[in-house]
Amino acid sequence: MTLNIQVAVDCTNPHELADWWAETLDWAVEPQDEAFIRSMIEQGFATEADTVRHHGRLVWGAGAAIRPPEELDAKPPTRRILFQTVPEEKTIKNRVHWDVNLAGADKDDVRAALEARGATLLWTASQGPHSWHTMADPEGNEFCIS
Image (tube, rainbow, N blue to C red; front, side, top):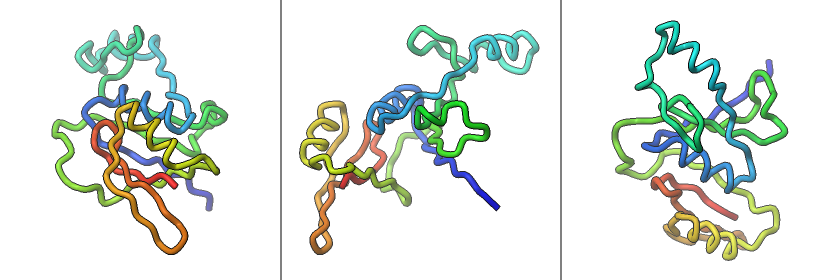
C-alpha cells in the first residue's frame, strides 16, 4: 500500500501564509479554478461569501495549498501543505512542526532572510555537532532550519 500525506496548517490568512511558505520552500501555490468556483456559486453549492480575491483572482476563502512545482499536476498530490482558516489565532506551542533542510545553505544567512520576510527566531539549539534554529512563520507556527 502506498500512502501520501498532506499537512494541514491552521491559520487566519491562508493565502498569505501559502504565498510565504511557497517562497520559503521554493514550492508553488496550487492554482484554483476560477471558472469552477463561479459554477459552484451559480449552482448554489457556494456563495460569494465563501470566496476572496487574492492577487486579483477569485479563490476559495477558506484555504490555499502549496506543492513542489513538479508535482502540481500529480493526482492525487504526493506532497501538499494545506493552509486552512480557523477563527482563533495561535496561542500555544505547536505539537507538530516541520524541519526545513537547508541543503548546505548557511543557516544564519537563511535565518536572516526569513526574518526579513516576517519570520521570528525563537531559539537556537544543538545536539552534538548538529545545530539548528527554531523559528516561527508570520502567524507563529514553529519550524526548524538546519
